[in-house]
Length: 157
Image (cartoon, rainbow, N blue to C red):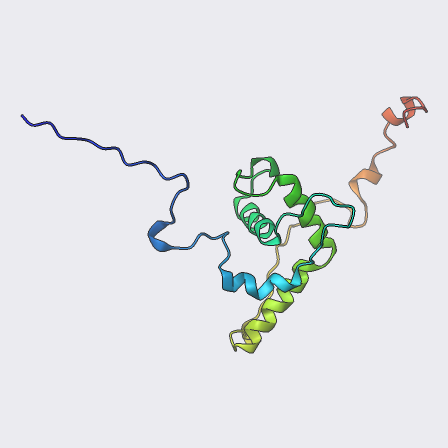
């Protein structure tokens, strides 16, 4: 009886993509080149400070976060910190960056003839009202004032 040599192949550190498909949250260079000029570039001030994390890395982390739907704290370690990503998300949303990206990509599709507005439709979700509820009355107003606030000391208010 002959013995076979068994060699273990080392496991890759990151899971490879299946059959050459690209990872959904990873941007190609061409995709990034289309939108990179929309993001604000902030330089470290003359007093110094910590250099900012690359916008591309943060944007890819936000794409992953939107697709995964997990809590911020569970972001993988290969992304920037969750607090940086959350801070940048708020900054970009308030600055209108996402709306500008959306408009820019729509304009690119229109230039390429891939945007067909004759096939556009709206969709909405409708929730039926509870039977017997008044339309203009908010449930909070139907109740009286909370009693716990009257018992709190004035120093804590």
